[in-house]
Image: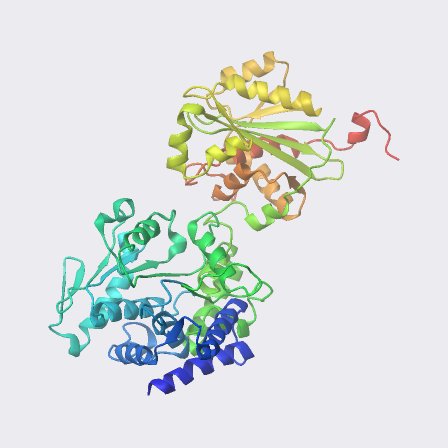
Length: 563
């Protein structure tokens, strides 16, 4: 029986590699890695064995339970080849000497509704109920509600299994296996701070793309130090915030299975199911790449078709469809203002010559204890706009802001993107001095300084006394809608060029839009969970820069004649 299961997974991996089973490049790479490891079993120096009995035991364990949801609800679970392949990699590869599992970590990325919770529940209960040790199994979403999804799946599975009656308790949010003393427990959000002294043997990180920081992951990993046979499983769909730790992990594990990458990690199992970059989302034949289970039955395909129709009809739903159903990373948050792939495409390693070019300065003063930003926009003779940005942060609050905002302010100060001003508040004289110094050093022609009028009366008066033209930009959709829309249009058209300022890019990624009933928009500071001050300052500048008369060329302003 166990030999038949081995033949199934080897045959499955070969079918993926040969193209008989449609799969993405990273899925193919994972199968190729597995087949190479199988071939190396004949080598006496190969440090791992493949335990076929473990594969049989897991398959037998899974068959004891019933589907709890969907079209198969109430029927006995029969593992698909895909699920069996995952289990075989996690459980069957073992060190020849110690007998411990080879893979201590696993990263599995699947589109939604591909039985992720079911598989995690089976993996967790298998370890807790059949291990000879007292296992501590923890399930960690970003919050208790997310953590409880897999926990509830485990509870539903074992409650419906007559063979397990009387062999466990389920109380106070914890499942305890009576014979071994092993426990299964979902973690609360507070656990990311202390870990509560836990000593996990298995940790499930569910929907890691939602996690704002790696705190839970770090706490659980550190608690596994004393375990001889630990396992941490990350299972997630793709996300839309590339600054979060899941995307960093995704990039790392993608390199592990990339044969052209020098990065190797024999203790990390990786399986990523996603659309490849050149795939057309309208082509149903490629949907199986991200949906190895959903795409195998008609109801699943119908659900994907319905999701695509909604996304095509309502563009705001496309981001969700791409991340959740096609498992593609999309760098744009919910209600996000800027498509970040387009913004990054506008970055330049070398900026145009801006000497003698008119410059419109946007200022967002924010609060004196927070980030204060200036952005500079230069209308170019070819119709494009060059943009630069610089921000200010009080030196005394730098460490605190780095901790609360969880961004590398200290590194940005070191690299010159932010000026740390002395004291606990930003002295606006530093802003005026910076503008004057930069304009003089680089030959910029400061035409106007555009500012948010909130708490800026004295600042505007000081600017005018310095000889600048200060222009008040009222903060409402009536004033800001057109420049906010137009700036995005210019980015989409490739007409913006920026110097890859990481602070400005971070702010653009944070920005969400507020839309009124007339479809006017503006950046929404209240709903932007992170700071958007540099982006807000840039929109202030664009409100004036977009309206200039370009009939007089930059060459004429420099006193030159264009040939």
